[in-house]
Structure formats: C-alpha cells, structure tokens
Image (cartoon, rainbow, N blue to C red; front, side, top):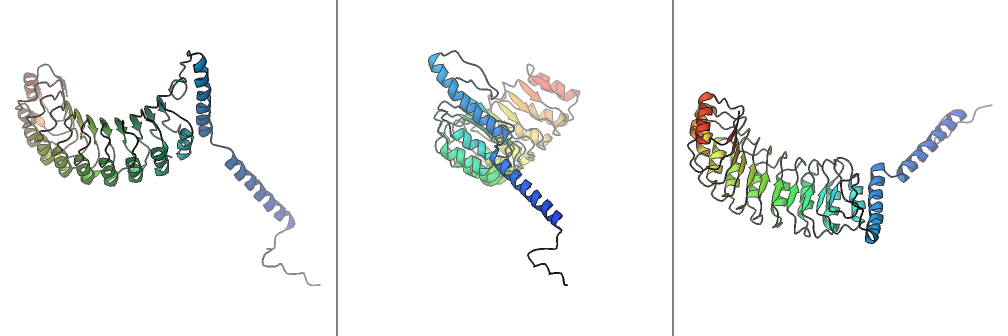
Length: 351
C-alpha cells in the first residue's frame, strides 16, 4: 500500500520533532510577552522616585523637616534640580514619566549622556513641559543630532532659560541655524562644543541678535575655519560676552586677524584659541586688538608662536588686566619667557 503524500502545508517532520518545535515556539512567545509586560528597571526606579516624592511632599505639609537627598541628587521635599544623567532616564519613555508629574519649581534638568534619548523625547519635553522657573538644561552627549536641536528650538515656554548645554550631540549646521533663530532673550551660557556646525553654523549663530545677555559661548572642535571666525567677529549684539572658546577650530591667521578687529565684545575676559594654527603672524594680528580691555585669561597653547610670536604678542597695549596666559607647546624659549614676565609681571604663565 502506498504511503500518503504530505500536503505542501505539512512538511515531512517526525512527530517528536514537531512537538519540540511547537514547545520552542510556545516558550519564545511566553518570553516575548514577559519582556513586554515587565518594565525596564531604570523606568521602574524613575517612577518610584516620583511616587515617593509625592508622599514626601504630603509629609512635608505636616512637618517640614525632611530635607533628605536621594539618589537623583535632589531634595525630597521640593524638586528644583533633577539629575537623570548617564542612563538614569530610560530613553524617550523616561520623558513620558517625568511629564506625568507636576514639578512646578524645577530649575535645572540634566539629561547628559542618555544616548537612547531621541528627537521624539526632545519633542515631548518641549511641547508638554510646564516649568515656569526653568533656567538650565543639559543634553550633552545625548546624540540627538540636528533633528533634536530643531525640536528643541521650537520651544516657546522656557522664557527664563539661561544655560543650555548641547556639547557632543552630533549636531551640524542645520541644528545650529535652528537654535540661532530662537528668542531665548535671557540666555547667558551656551555650550555647543564637539559638534560639526562648521562655518555655516557659526555664521548662523553670529547673525543672532536676541541673545543680548549671552556671557559664555563654547564652540570648541566644531570644524570652524577662518570664514566662520570672521562671521563671529562681526557679531555686534553679544555685548555682555565674557568667555569665548574656539579651541581646536584651526581658524588660522586670517580668522585670528578677523577676531582681533571685533569692537563689540568689550566685556570679554577669557579667550581660548588653543589648537588654532596660530604662528608669529597670527600673534601679531591678535595683538592689534584694542577693544578687549577686560581680558584676563588667554589660552594660546598648542600653536606655533615661538619667541618671535611672543615678541609680537607683547606689543598689545590694551590687555592691561592680564592674569593668566597659557603658551604650552609653542616653542617658547627663555627670551620669550622674559618678555612675557616683563609685559605682565603679575600674571600666571603656563609653559
């Protein structure tokens, strides 16, 4: 008698093998369901923090004695600063949890190095947060990129924002341009270091006219050359700028010469031009500056000034308040040291 053929939908598999396959499928399905239902530990911990905080707030109404500090570095009685850096957030889902709770007195939110945070989480934060006292935000190391920066720039409620840290977020010129169009009129400190905004991004920032209170600006390691430095030098609205970091930008002699011509930054106290491809000609160009009369700290390390560059640098007549100068790795010899000591005898010299 002929054995019946297996239908196309039923491959020739032994009964015991079929049972084993079905059992494996069942176990995998149960595993998937379990993973879906069980929340990530970091999110569970985050939610527990807020739940316990609500309880402490109720206790405080009865007895205002609990000022203990928890693992998030904030007072249990009243949240003003919330540190969820380095994986404590749990990605975009963590933003959802934060926004479920009222934090009326929040001033500072630190989300640094949460690499699982995306544009979606930033958008939620921007659209749904209600923090009237909010003044400081750090998203450094989050890798939110241009799209995240664009989402951030759409915020209309953080009218008191004073400090914004976006160091190393994989941002380019488009993100910088979006931020530059914001009217955060109280912004005082902006860190965009270790990104790729380039000359286009630097030009967009330079065209900003609303950050009249800006005091500290860091653009280190951002692919900015002479073109970008020249654009920045033309800015006339940052009249309260006290610190500018353009290190590792390699702006060269032309860019340095353009910066030296700036006449608006009369409050400038600290200038970092390390790794900027400056030689003796660049030092001569920089020394022509006449407006930075409050300059107290100058970092020119890792360039190529040599003693000839020092000779040119000490010709400056306006930097009468110099207190610190860094000339490390510049080929400066004993003659150069003597000239610096004679020009600024009370300053700290680093070689």
